[in-house]
Amino acid sequence: MKKPGGAEKKKVRRSPSNSTPPRKPGANKDVFQLFAEKVRDHKGLVSRWAVLQETRVEYFRGKDFVAFVRNHSELKDILESDKGLEPEDIANTLLNKNLLVRCDRLVKTVRPGKKKLSSWPAHLEIYHDQVFSENDAFFAWAFVKRRPLWQTLLSFCWPVLTLAICLFPVYPHWAKLLILYTCAGLLLLILCLLFIRALIFGAIWVIFGKRVWFFPNILAEEATLQDLFQFWPQKDEGERPKWTARLFYAIVAVVVILVLRHHAPDEAARARYQKRVSNIIDDVLEWSPRQALSGMMETVVNVTDSNDNATDDSKSGSEKVVFPDDLGEETIPQEDTEDVTGNVEDSDHQQRDL
Image (cartoon, rainbow, N blue to C red; front, side, top):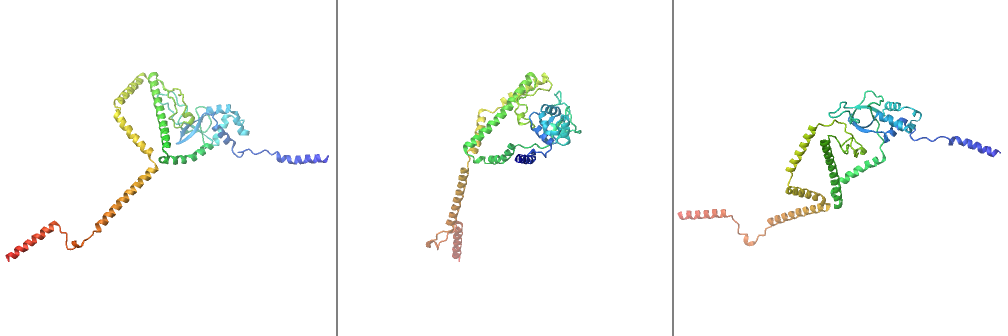
């Protein structure tokens, strides 16, 4: 009877050490900081990028934040004891902890041709009253977003890519052709996309008087990668242009096309330009280190040959063979011989006179 009791006592003594709950990771971190990071990484909250005092920031609208918190109430469990707070109270706490900054649009006047202000302005300024509001209020994240692992690994690849670009001349010929055709194809695709996009916009604007931009964010600097390839155009918020303006620009477009067609280069000029460009490309593609080394060797051989010839000429000029028969004879220039003969004749006439 004692053994079971002793066993129970031992179990009771060991139970307190095993009942301690494990520490949660990040227990020392602010729960509002964790909540802000979770909300920022969530795709349900619609956000955009803008310029705030020469700094690019990510921001969202107040009404979108309230709707997001109400639709995703499970995220409020991160706040633990404060999970019963309303979205407005949570936003004010984030503002007090400098995790959010309330902003206002920099341009507050409607642009010409627009009916109302833009829903997502591209330039912001800090609002004087840092209190949460849903009505036309914007809030930018004031902390640095945690960088994912793939971005860290990608940052180490940039130096390797730069070195690879610098070593392009020493690539094999097939690799040069692959890189050339890939880059030329991408460039041609971008130019064709921009041209077709502008052509569709001009035709629809002249015929129907509507502004339709396919791929509306393709040239936007503040757009994310997901928004950059958004195909469907945005709704036209501007006023319909007058028929006189549409007719004027249609006439201008036709005149420009006719002038460009009249002054277009002929076939011979095009062939010359194509030959010149192809020669430049061939020089770059066909260059190799062996050709560079062979060219250096040819220059070295030419320099040594010229030096040898110069030394041979100097030796032949300095080392002349003198024969015994030529010791008593001196080479006298022609002018000197004439002077000598003249002097001899003068001396003979003087002797005769005497």
